[in-house]
Image (cartoon, rainbow, N blue to C red; front, side, top):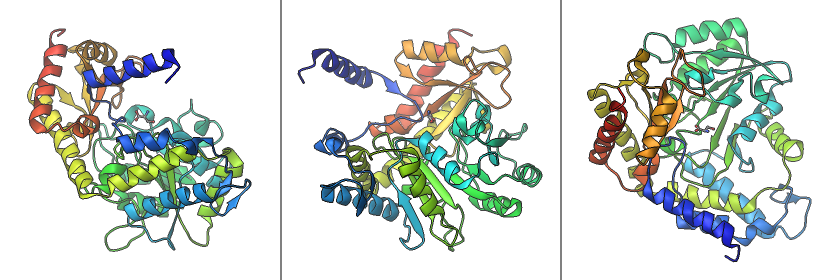
Length: 398
Ligand code: DSN
């Protein structure tokens, strides 16, 4: 690269990544093949529209790229082409979620998602997000007793609020979601069910998390499923929207919002990189990886608990966990904890805990994830040692 300044920054970031233990629950490390696709000439091509229906000429190759990504996405999650549609053009998770609401929820109607501080995402209707401004929102919380979803209370809340769409799938919730219960609640409330599986999509693909699409018996669950592609799916920064094909025309409405409603030309280099990642995820090696991710998170959680730290929700069934570092004033704030860990070479993010008494910029906890370090080959014993290091770094200050 001739641009010395940028080259230097890329090299420095590469070295930084190599040096640290990365426990950021939403990050991962992509393969060389994914990087190659991202850095390819596909970035030069314009092609607004969809395969076979573009506003530009010279799109025969990118049509194939996009079709390949679509087919691989459907195959990976074992979806029938007749029953499910897929859009691989969303630029990332937030625009994907915005597109779903814009397509399916009339402005001023209600979105129901989980409260941010309890584990939800900004785009699930939080007031500071455009999704909480263009639409009304009703935000559910977890139970005070065990910090998990109380499906009876959720049902009551949904029947009272009557949202047009209910969102399941979170950024900091460590337990497996009961999609069947969410479906029943959505049906009772007359709402669509959207699952945002951004965090656990790789676990679904790896068969260590239930599918949000349908049960094994074929019972339909979500109407729409969104996912980013760069977390447990281990692909480039992008997103995918799956929608059920039926007489409601959800898929057509979503496609129309993505282009011409919201976006311009698709990022074909990224779409190619998504296709590469989806192929990698479909291998037995990835299935082993996904199982290891969950085992590693559990080892980390169990060891931290053994050392006296309070794990939010009492543990984890997925790739992530939250640690209550504040412990009602006996410990340290999440921001200070994250800073101290960074100084010791462990990268995490500060995170609110349910019913947090501290501010989001300096909350009571940290969020940890096992996906990136599992990509680097770490096993349970390594995660037990990481837990012990975390304990040493944070305990010094207690
Ligand atoms: N920022 C992502 C996360 O860390 O979970 C969600 O968008």
